[in-house]
Length: 200
Image (cartoon, rainbow, N blue to C red; front, side, top):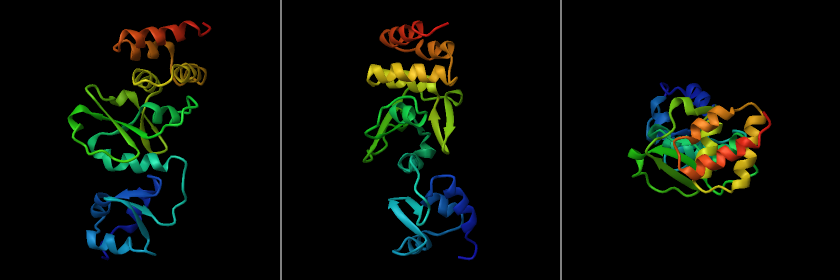
């Protein structure tokens, strides 16, 4: 028990909205029985769900539910996407009814999780299409906008997102057009139409 790196685990959890996985605890030198001991009522950790724990007295944060959904799928290559990414980028008024995560198509066997919507993609976001927000990997503004529209988000929310992203310098017309260029004609037409409305 003396070989457990509690400080290292705390620092890791601190960067993850207070959460850590059972595997991260094992990597810090803790065996699973010790982890269960610390997760008993009144212990230093609380069990959030199978394989996921939280520092008991860690302050809550607005996006911790996103962290709790993403962490167990981190090693599967999950990235926060679609409406959840719109929310994290503060690009629209949409309130996601689930945490949206994109995964490579090879991970389509992942079990369903309550409150999580998994998008398994043939072309998952590459490194250039991912930003870090609140310690989470999140699809870039242009990828987020295109993915959300393609998946059926309300057009007025996407229109707002386009204007917000351009106004705040989060993307450019060129990058938005490039993101839409590989998608269906209706996506290209919609994005192109919104960009025509933007003053030069």
